[in-house]
Amino acid sequence: MAEARRWLLWMTFVLAASMTASSAFAAVVIGSKAFTESVILGELAAQLTREAGYDVEHRRQLGGTRVLWSALVRGDIQCYPEYTGTLRTEIFANQRIGSDAELRATLTRESVWTSEPLGFNNTYVLGMRRDRAAELGITRMSQLVEHPALRFGFSNEFMERADGWPGIRAYYHLPQTDVRGLSHDLAYRGLESRSLDLTDLYSTDAEIVHYDLTTLEDDARFFPAYDAIIVCREDVPEAIRESLNRLGSRIDEAAMTRMNARAALDRQPETQIAARFLREQLHVDSDAKVQSRAARIWQRTREHLAMVGISLGLAVLVAVPLGIVAFYRPGVGRVVFTIADVLQTLPALALLVFLIPWLGIGYAPAIVALFLYSVLPVLRNTHTGLADIPRDLRESAEALGLPRMAQLRYIELPLSARSILAGIRTAAVINVGTATLGALIGAGGYGQPILTGIRLDDTNLILEGAVPAALLALLVQWLFGWIERRWVAAK
Image (tube, rainbow, N blue to C red):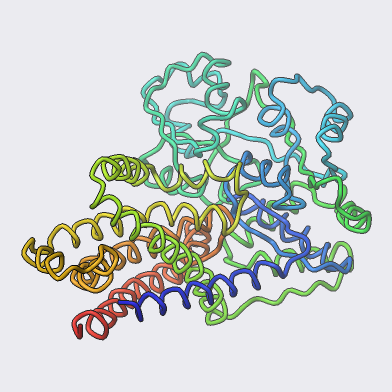
């Protein structure tokens, strides 16, 4: 058991060192939201920053507006693409900001710099299948009030935003109750399969034409202008600002729609799409290298192993001693198990978001969340292993005059080792699956290709993350079985 513990500690150290070395590479971090256009704009910003002479990392698909804004304010990222309407209605909803000049002044007070407008207004629109809208005679948003049975499906962020469903429902007095939240990219398939009647769209979405959708006129003028910009921390170097401002007024709505189509419909990598635009419009010879599949899987494997290994190692170091204390101090044990049970019931995605204000984005919140989920299986199995030791063995040890710590080290822990190892194995398998959610907050891992595959409706990309994750879970099962045979069964 002692050898197994030393091996686990050594692996934790190696993974921590690997994680630190890989995360320390980038000097400038560009973020982007979890939809195709934001990823493309983030890649444009990243390549321009690299062209200006800076090392850069593009952290893609980091979730919604609040996640990106919090990361910017904390300094976890230096820049990300945003929209003026989103800033007015979501970030500064209580300040009644009118003109662009007022918005810039507000951002300056928040120590945030903004680029020149990129040249297009990607406003929200509500869309329906063309045949369904024609069947009901709907062309304007105000007409939705006449059809209370319509089934609405909105992106999850849109469900909560002031300029989203709550605002539209109040502004247009809409009576619909069959309203659900889902991924923006999955909503198109919902319309196609006729399980939804209406969803929120971005006006530059290439899928509008591809799925033969019609957009409803905002006849009461609810939506504000959503001019695309890039926001950065005020402390970014002037050279980066000048480089990003080269995009000012260079991307019109048609150009952005074409780039979205290349990514979402033609399955071209965003890196190549951005490089092509910069080459054609700004004569920038940008590096558009695309990793091979093997290289991508190897990178995601390192990231996934770092999250799983470090969180599991920390959980063992904490949960085994806690399990021992819980066994010998039942009163303390009840409190410890109550806390561990509560932590285990928290939804993983919610826990990750809760940790962002304190730990930022990236590895830290992912590892802490996985650590918290790992504690209960190890804690419970440690307690169970000790409780299952026959009473006569304990009495024999006491009769021999062995000190309490000696009994624990030489008799009780070896006898409970199989149960403890089973708890560690359970925690490890749980972590392998749960760690895929780390991609939502910039931690990478196998969740990254899964999220990208869902966004682009690309089964191959989904499998690129799902299959290695499943294989890793099987490998973990085999590894702990080998440890049990090598170090536990032999005792």
